[in-house]
Image 1 (cartoon, rainbow, N blue to C red):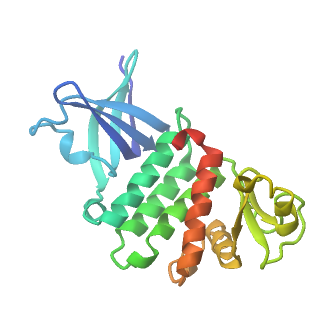
Image 2 (image 1 turned 135 degrees about the horizontal axis):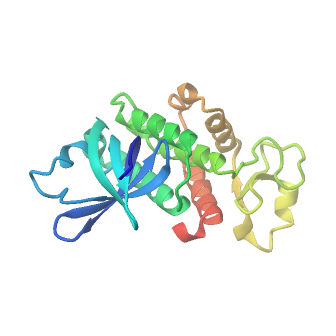
Image 3 (image 1 turned 180 degrees about the vertical axis):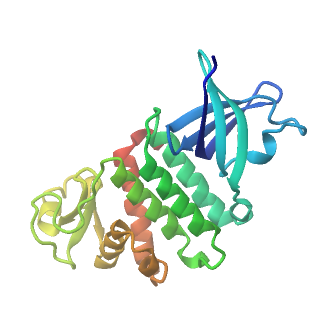
Length: 246
């Protein structure tokens, strides 16, 4: 007897196969990452086509074959046409998809990450979300995602010596796992790639992200310099946590 499985999932990658098939990478609520073969889905008459596509949240049904999983049914829960029609939001969706593809390789249930995806894409679909702060949505996703994966960034005290941070002399080190003090940064001056100067505003934003205080974050007026620092910190962390991504 063939067993069928049904769960909610987020489609973050698709690849064309054969004449009309697709291979879909789906992050599911019950099983984590799964690769689903969607037979003949590119045909206009396909019954699967209306229910699933890139960046959709869908209820999916699949069967487990000897070598692969095959999609048998898909019901759309949330589509993301508004995101696809906004270049900046689409860029963030693609960044999130790349993070999932590079960080998560095997099948393992992770309901917290699925809930985070739902939360962030709900924010991206919100038309009231100001374009000026749109990149904050990616940083909000990334830092909370890596925290769920076990990479706990230290922002309250120096990640090296555990001492109190001077807000006017702080640095970020992906290798050390967070914010470090000026004294510890000075010891790494021979290797400047190991740490970078940041400011107190960037540190405050990171602390708010880990508190998941979106109401405050969404209303922040982040200066251009601080926003650039946050973007640089995020890129450094990605290189430190997942070299294959780069």
